[in-house]
Image (cartoon, rainbow, N blue to C red):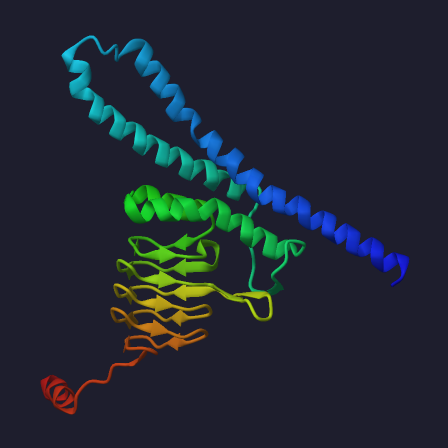
Length: 256
């Protein structure tokens, strides 16, 4: 083994160790900053509003605690979201070595560290329009009047058109982690206009839903599948739902 090869390995190992440290340190700092608004408001309330020497203080205490929890969730959302936005912690399509020294893989890992706690929280506490604002902040494209429920694993690689709906417990993946080859493959998912992703459906990387297409509840759409406009897909794997001959005859007979 040459001296140059040894130096490269030492540098790679040193870089890997530093990035492992960053994967822990950055989320700790970011989420600690998210606590600041809650700490400040609690301090002010204890100084000027709540003194625990009146019955009314105990009556309002549960409401104040609830509001403080909501404030904490919102401040954590925007603390992580702004960090992701300002420092461009996003990734692009491609296949990458799953290693701390790979820049794209590291960005994906750091993104997950910052996004996953928020995603898990939003699964429990629905935040409506605030959730949409957060998803847009971290790179997801969401059209007008679209309702994004369920779980988005890779917001910066997912796009929704206008007037589209994603049901509860549905999941959209834009990455596949191959443990055997130690690679991560990222592909965009595009949901068109006026589309429906049914409750519990699973959308894999590279899927394109053309306008007015529908994925039925519980369906699994394999990677790189293109769903045609005005079509409905159901099952595992998802297949086009064909109309019965009788229904087709009725439709044709109703046509003037």
